[in-house]
Length: 126
Image 1 (tube, rainbow, N blue to C red):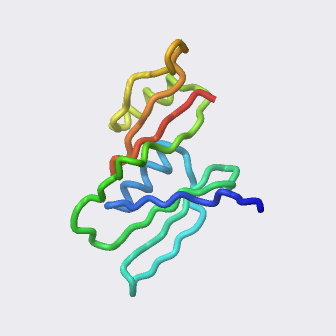
Image 2 (image 1 turned 30 degrees about the vertical axis):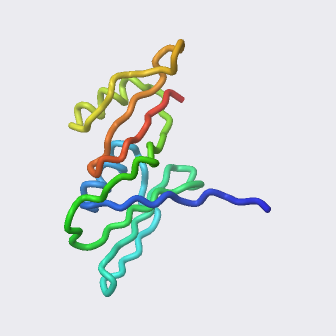
């Protein structure tokens, strides 16, 4: 049997803040949206130009408190050609950004930027 990855769902507190982050900071585009006002939630799907995989932002209307990101979840990852320029841009946008890092014994190849809900995005040199 063959499986194809489709999407990863994350729950967000403020849909507009999250959309701004994923569109402007990561360059994703909204591919579709499903509103369910009677059930008080909205699903927004975002992808890159390839459209082969999506992030699903789930917004439950009027959440009472921030979601707890489990200790088993680590991060999502994206690739970029100019790592240093991307890191500088994310800092200028006001997001929490780590130093450039590399695996032990290797030169710096990645950093992390944190979205408005506390999810880490690893940005890797393409």
